[in-house]
Length: 348
Image (cartoon, rainbow, N blue to C red; front, top):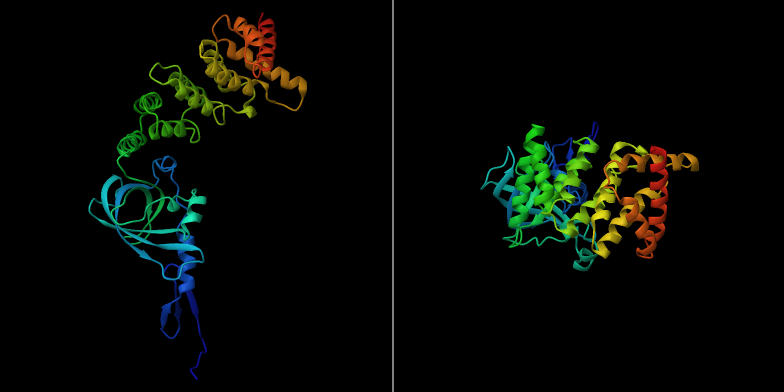
């Protein structure tokens, strides 16, 4: 029997092998599968959060072949995409024509894939010749971990152009150059580039709230933006971080109320008017404080601040809505009118 005094073992999950003191090593299928499952993050279809500077590399890759893992976890299909870099959109490491290996992990059963679409690996055709736009991070050697990806097809040209524009905007360090490009993105784009601008202004908070809201407001009130898109922008504007009840009646919240009121006042289409009134009512009618008196004080202060940027005649508009508006919106119109008149009385 071999003398195992001083026996040592070490599991290296990167290479998934057991290394023995005696110098022998062999593949461990379970360790390989467990490592692969941990190393392969769930893939997103949303490229936008990965655009920020210092983030992942962006490439267009072509799948040349697929190497499947022999012992995947039960119910999983895992392996590695063997790819060629077709185009470099942002990277200091990768070059066009280079080789790259991208691990993947998805549901084995096609029916399960259809139900679990949140993992983008389940949605992508992992076949030879498929091209993908990927946001990825280098791992080791030619291996890289993909964090987000979409398929390149006949409809992708506009999205790729907008992604390139967003990456370029992200690289600008001078706000005087960057902010006009963000404003342009809100007005001219309808897809990824607008989403990037909203992410930059909102979630990432790189622009002060009042200025960010003004930029979104400019887009909403631009003739270049189709009416349905204006409502989509408003849906973003009424949520945090643009409108935040924790900030009470601060200038940013007042700016959001003013934007909603102005557009409700100007809207002629009944259905869109209902949407604007619903947005406006939802921001005013909700609670800002558990203390009833303090809550009312905050609402009056908020309406008072907003009124400076709302056209004259808004009170008459509210009276008309309270009487002849849609049944669903009349209660909100009545409450808004009461707040408006009380705030105007306090101002006097």
